Length: 86
Image (tube, rainbow, N blue to C red):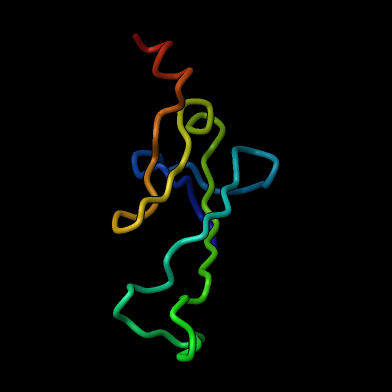
């Protein structure tokens, strides 16, 4: 469940879907050598794991979210926000 902005430096609470930006991310359910409930042992492909993240209006204007295997979900400045800061 989403409860606050995904930016770790922001404490804005999630209140409404029409405020900010909601992200649907497909992440790794488990590592290549791990096992998990719901995984089919007959296949080498792990089950999909979908998570939701939210950025408040202020954070969504300056950044987006990215997923990197091994690191997880992180914030990334938007290209236009980087240019404006220079």
